[in-house]
Length: 330
Image (cartoon, rainbow, N blue to C red; front, side, top):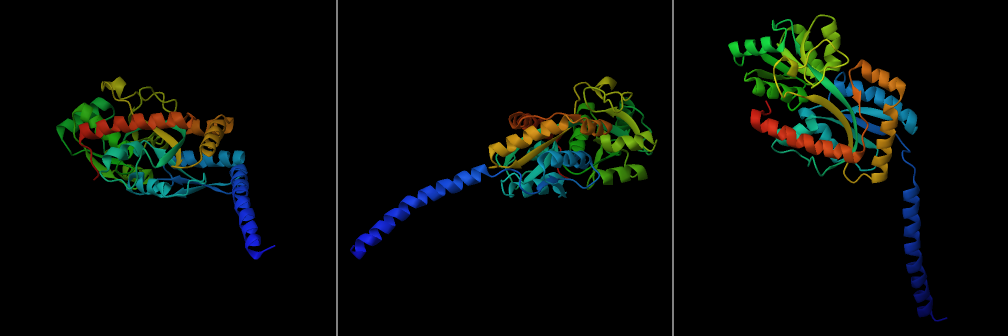
């Protein structure tokens, strides 16, 4: 056979084999099980805070169900935006997820130039849990309830100090929102995480804080802090004797911390759906429910679609609060 025809036949055979090989590779990739290696769960605040207290037991239960380690990676800073930027740049393969709080929605309007798009750069996974917050006073604050706090703040505008776990933190905006509704002015003192706030409260460096009930209650029980109110519309099972802010005359005030898992945009839907399902199953485990209840957490366990709708509502809500209060990054 002439050399020309031999070469032509080889070219034709090769061209037919390439698509078949590509299809086989695609099928093999689609059949790859997930997960096959450790999953990184990024926490946007330092250890010891409410995100960490939820993330630790959740990771333990998840790795038992998934058969792979779930490793906590702490990336605190800039109100959670450093960790969120890290996630936005991560590979969308299901092996990096981030625990976000209400600050994720708050930051969208609080920071003028974020290095990511809150709506477009992430894939929702699951709304994991809610957690009431408590208005706690230090030994420095004589006020024992909300009305006494309002009277004290009006007597000395800008003199009372409230600490938060960082700019844009839910506690920061909750206090700004409360001040706006109550018609008072207080001075914000941001710290690097809840541990910094707790230490400042115990030392009497600040007057009060709007912080998660899980981190504040041990010190309230010990008598080193005192609870003025919980910020949610209903009382917390963890502190049933502590009245809500609304009960004490501040109508319409309702702030509840929430925690969710998100992944980078482009993460395959089958992975986010699987992880969402596993989280829901995990949250039904009696052992985890007991652990979460001890910290005041209320399990949710939503679909990705329900989480996305929740985030959209929260972005809209907190944008209005930022605008009406004039809250800004200190």
